[in-house]
Length: 171
Image (tube, one colour):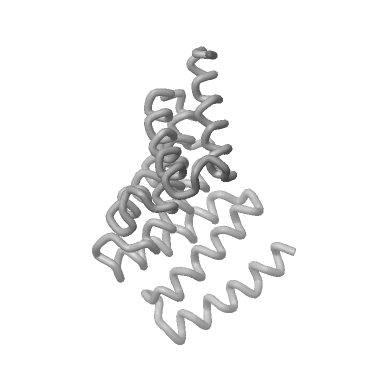
C-alpha cells in the first residue's frame, strides 16, 4: 500500500508546510520520509528529489554538524547505493560519517555503523584496502561496546571476510 502511504504523507507534508513553513525540521523529516517510500518503490529519482529537499532545509537550519544532517546524508547514500551509483553513495556516506564523528565521537555505535557503511561502499567500488580500514574501525568500536557476542560483531567479521575474499587473501 505504498501509494496509499504516499497519498497521506503528501497531505501531511502540505499541512506541515502551511503550519511550520517550508524550512522547518518537521517539514524536512516529512520530505525524507516520502523519499524513503519512493526508495521502497524503487523510484530512485523521486527518492533523491525528496531527500535532497530535506537536506537543503537541514543545511539551512543547521549550519554546523547536526545528527539530522548525517541521517539525511546516510539516507541519500543508501538510495544511490540502491542505484549502484557507488561514488555518489560514498560521498554521502562519508559526509554522514564526518558529522557523526564530530557529534558522537569515534567510539559510538552510530559512528561504527557509519564506518561499516563506508566500508561496504568501498568494497562495492573494489577498493578493498579502504573497505578493510573502515570495516576494522567498525569492528574495534563494536568490540569495545558489545564484546565478542553480538550480531554487529558477526556481521562485521563476515564483511571483513568477504572483503578479504575479494582480495583473494583466503587464509
